[in-house]
Length: 85
Image (cartoon, rainbow, N blue to C red):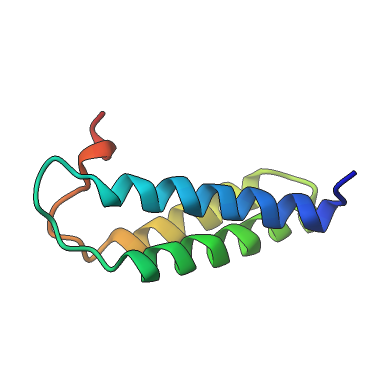
């Protein structure tokens, strides 16, 4: 059985894996640094998951996720293809 910490790490890594995979095969040619996206998403997921575990509420995690997305994706001049799908 996976403990709370293990569950947070596994969920963060799974989220980072699928998010990075979405950037690997975009229909349009957009340049992304996949390593940065993978590391930031995994790290952000661990922090957001830990916040959820500590606060015992999803509300702080929702706000943290919004801030994370704005910081990571806010400088993109074009949205990734999967945002609109």
